[in-house]
Amino acid sequence: GREHQRANNRLRQLLAAYKQVEMLLRLGEYQAGADPVTDCAVQLNDAINAFLRQDLREPVPLQETLDGLLRITSQLPE
Image 1: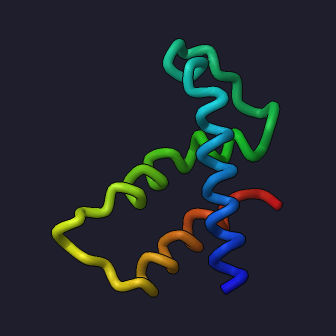
Image 2: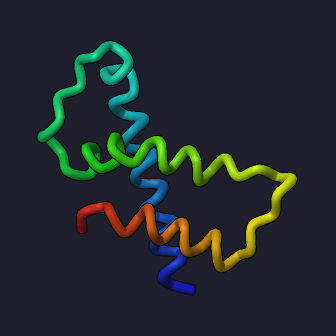
């Protein structure tokens, strides 16, 4: 439904924000505090990657997947 579509859009927003600063992070030059969305994306990056790397041999029920998506994206500031 709408809530899941919104969560999907928020996940994309987090991924895009992380991608914008990925090189700075690798160089150790990222300075937190300038943008709350980017800070959130950096903090949640490991959780996002773990969520996206679900093992194909171990199916996860749809509701569990949606709950995981909502758990991650609910941390994004409005």
